[in-house]
Length: 439
Image (tube, rainbow, N blue to C red):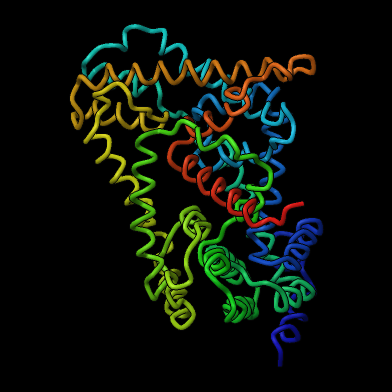
């Protein structure tokens, strides 16, 4: 007897089951996502998340509670800093207005008071500690909190639909399968539902559907292994202009560490078994141009890779661990002694933490405070100029530096994650423009 026929009678009386009631709208969105390429949950989560991100740069830019949340978290995480900027567009002079308003407010509320406070400009570990404490994040990234909530809701809806809807099971059996992270999350939710009285072979169906077509290459394989919303997989580079991005100022630590991580990551991707990476590093590495010969034969050991990923998915991504180690090594090797370095806000905060703990000389406190003041003033000045010139009668007065201020702010607030993401998108955009047919 087939799985569908075996379980359909068991799920006719839904009121007797200890499961959430089906949301017809949520189920409809998931069904629509299954008709598109890639993991349907990745797509559904991104579609819901993109609505939230759009709200931040539109209504959120005039919402006082949102400003308070962003101030507490000292901006957004690196990944969502870029996502917020990408939600907007370079097509209009005011394209990044919401992004600029949120980050200029955070600079003015959290950083400017420290810049004007001379008590922090001393060469002492206590001064470094005080400054680090003043720059601490007292709240999580608002967009991360929203995404986690959305993802939980979508995973629950997906598992419930598999257990309760024969139509949903048929659609999933013939549609795209889940990525491994979402497959594991749905399987865990189904086990919980089955423990409450739901029976059937939903887990077996998921396992059977998690296959790899023989013609999949690196980007598709990486998406299946690591997840990743569809927006970052190519859509972002179409919305932005990169003609002047090569002149962007970048954090010295970000540039140095990113280069070394890319070199070592290339070795991981040449191995016969796919490495266990976080979603973001999986996207970063898969988005970089890779010669065919540099990709290991991931097809034959697919079952071993899937099994290893299922047991190690909670382990720290090796590239994340490498990045953290190299960041500290770089900060210790060149602790702002020349006064010429550019450091992003996360690396300024990290340098202050290392100084307070004695890992950097106490004299680094003065340099760190000076870098904080210098960059905050410059970034804030250009953001304010951009905001002021976004009115209809002032748009022609926007300077090139002001127009690019969103990228500068994204890199300064978002650190190495934002910097590497923008660099990858810039590379993808340049590559795409070179391959386009003129006219």
